[in-house]
Image 1 (cartoon, rainbow, N blue to C red):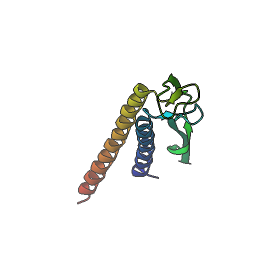
Image 2: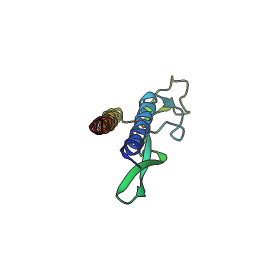
Image 3: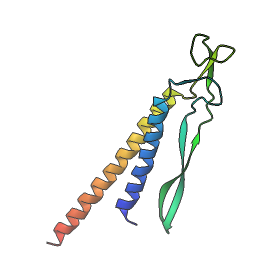
Image 4: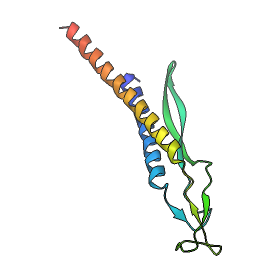
Length: 130
């Protein structure tokens, strides 16, 4: 396990966060005819993987639904309205999703910088040997 592997795994984890956030934002405006079928935000759950002593990386363990409940809205003219005239808006907090997206993008960029620094140091070390 080297710095390139570790940063690569970290970037993969952040990419998974970005994909989940993109899915959540894409479905934020969706409507359903029942509470049970309404979209709920997705969250990746990560676990630490220790490949060798003192070296830990991250891996996606599973993807779960967030605890944000869908919102009932009375709209009897909507084609998906139930017998009471209600529809259910997706359980997505758009503000929280945007914050999570910015955080994941920054962490991804931090790992890109780690890779660039490691590459530069490796090339500089090779130049010393010439």
